Length: 385
Image (cartoon, rainbow, N blue to C red; front, side, top):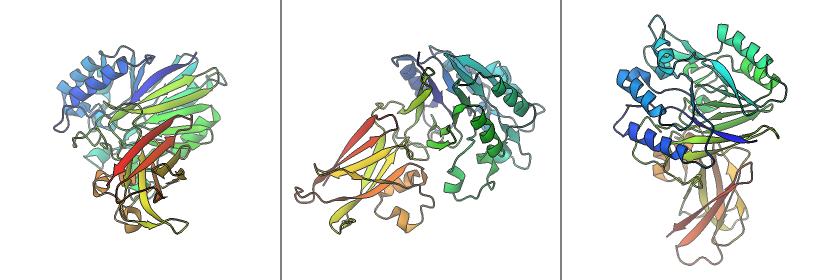
């Protein structure tokens, strides 16, 4: 039988001016009300134990409000660099080791730590990602014991594969605090042993990378940009809302699927579209309007289309952007979207939709639809003018 579970990450409780405790509790109540109810939740770090004992105790009390078990791994903000045992506080709070595994419903789950100390720094850069030593040997042994054909899900804090550093202007290995140093070794091990899905957080955005049968998924943060902005929509670094991931596993057919859910938002709300009112030529030379669509959990497996009024659908192109100071990447884009940081996300679609033959004056409507890899469609209607 199939079952579902929740992945959430980067709470950063107690940081900023917003009601972090209240929004976390709202998320818990949303998850408890899901039908069918998830079997368990996975939390991939940055509870923010460094904020003090009060936050640590609050997290445990709130975690007890889930109607299902919770499994945790530490984040860099849960590690006390400089102490004799930097993860002792975490282990004492959670009541288990920082890496472990368990089975559920015909699938195998592996929790990884992968956090190493860099004493050269005293800020957030003092942790970098690498699975090594005892943890590496344990991981190899654990994967070797899994029965062939069993779906394997791995979860940890720092993404194993991510284009985030590059999109922020860094070369590979230039920003170790955002990366896993032995990512290629891990990927080879995962692909050899049938790992299907690797879940992570840390970068406060959604990204999906599929490679050799393994899918690496980063999930947007519950705190958005560290509780520093007011709106629920567009609160993460990639313009996605604060949220969590609903993952469904069907071991009998070997399928794993997922949906990103914004806290306080309907599951159908999966995209934001911005159109420029300044006409430009389309590929056919006819007048049209530049359109930018941010599909919060989109990737190359999605299809995104747009149409003006009831004209034919036009396919849009996936464009991962980087330096937002470049005029060719930001021309015709809404200033609020630029300011949100969404332009550095890995899930933007661009295109030019032709002017409708039935359009009157300066008022018009644009329809946008996005289809995910499991043929679920999400639509939005933009009225302008």
